[in-house]
Image (cartoon, rainbow, N blue to C red):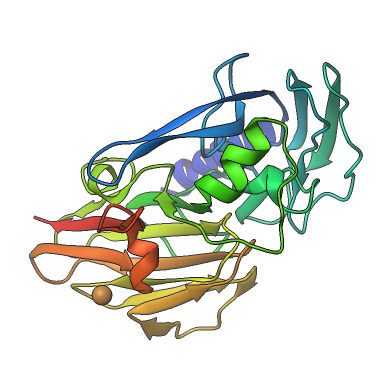
Length: 303
Ligand SMILES: [Cu+2]
């Protein structure tokens, strides 16, 4: 038994050492489209980071690393305006990448948790247009715990929240016009770039679990507004709010307000069967151009 334990420790150490690696990512900035399907849907002009040139996505690709990794993110800017790449509360280099230029941002993976990365230039317009995504940092041993020695989970979801003002921001910015940033009246609200009707069926967005299973939901608000998320069915435990780990026992809530450019991590445990909605509590923010529930909403399925 001791021998077996010793071997396990060695394997874990070896695994950990191997994981403290250099991780290289490439992002391409392009203009493109984001289509919200269903009633109230539309095609929005966006600017986004993509894994491949010419294929911007909203949200940007999730970058997943382990604590302590050396991370190199090379960003190619194929767009006709300057952009950057900043990880909120982690990196400080906000120097622009000129049009048709590229730049490698290097940093060490911070303590395990969820982080927002975005383009911080242009008075929030670049972020609103779609240049935002999540950096997920796992513990050094890559275990399914929120952090080393922290709470364990069975499933994981990343919810990147966004809002967009199509007529006043996207339509104007995408045609090279000057956006009046003193007016922002978003008419599209997304979870992982999806309107609610799609987010309710998207297996990477909806929560699914069996009795007693725990889902770690990493909520990243890339929008301009605070968004309150209301989970039906069960309460959840807040384990990280705005980057601050919550003490044990964790608070039990059913709604959490996540300010813009901040992050929350909650544990949702299945303890009763059924199908329940999760929606942003502000009525307008659960719509797509006014159509109810095609905005910031998804489903919780317990079987
Ligand atoms: Cu509700």
